[in-house]
Length: 340
Ligand code: NAX
Image 1 (cartoon, rainbow, N blue to C red):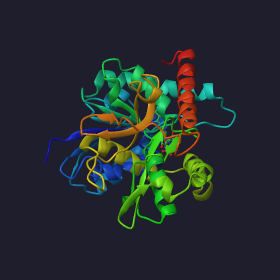
Image 2: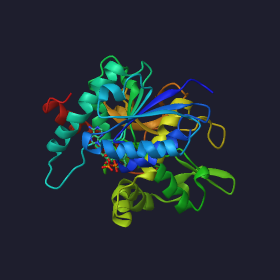
Image 3: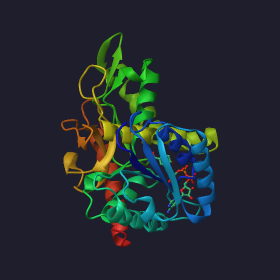
């Protein structure tokens, strides 16, 4: 066995937390040779529920579970942490304006960023799940000047997985037969699930996705359905996505820490992750935006030469510009509020 790794989960008593913790403790995130120390961060009102989850974790007798600590103190929760999964956030409630939502979340992600800056391991990896995820990640990152910005990411892997599953279902193939889907931009309704460089394997032959499904289906059904899938789940299930969000979070952290590896045809397998822009694809430097990405087990890397193909899907460039414009306007709003 390797040395134990510390994993901090915020919002540990929530729905996603409950779907996430047992899989981490079972070795599904960091591998079956890596013991984990879990730190559960909650607000005081939910500490008791988090203690209950900790009791159940003990009752699973996971061989890899070194310890579980429950706390409402970010300094303690992030002390020496290697993996910070920021799930807890302030949800939007009726009558709340965007500014109110950003303000409330600034009050959570600013202090958590500072605590990560002061207490986390130097090689910490952070993923923000709590919405608005990209901008919450930006706020946390801006409060952690001593941590490389590339260590702060936001989750768009759920959108990516939804897009892969929907394309596979439409093409009548398995998810293993789909490759090269990209989610661009913000984890919000403006996101751009892009098929212009995706491929689908039909009868053992890889074909451009847009030759297998047409651009009308892509425009009218695929893109809105992926972007609105969260709302669709709520309307059918009566509760928001939890197990699928947890599964995507595990995928994101596992790929980051262990590498994305090779795809079905041996070439680098790429996925989507919201990571700090280096200016690629016209996304202003410093924004935390979803890109086509690979990981070598060290850092996420933006894959070059995959600009949305206008010829394959007219309007693709506009869609990328629109979601990036929304990220810029969220960044400007949190700047105006003094949150970054
Ligand atoms: P829940 O409301 O079930 O759980 C959230 C938990 O966070 C609560 O237990 C709450 O006490 C805790 N919390 C609040 N403030 C905290 C703080 N300052 N420190 C520690 N804990 C705190 O929500 P859940 O369904 O688990 O969803 C969590 C977040 O994920 C929400 O913001 C949700 O919008 C977001 N999602 C993001 C997704 C993504 O793909 N990026 C998809 C799923 C989900 O909608």
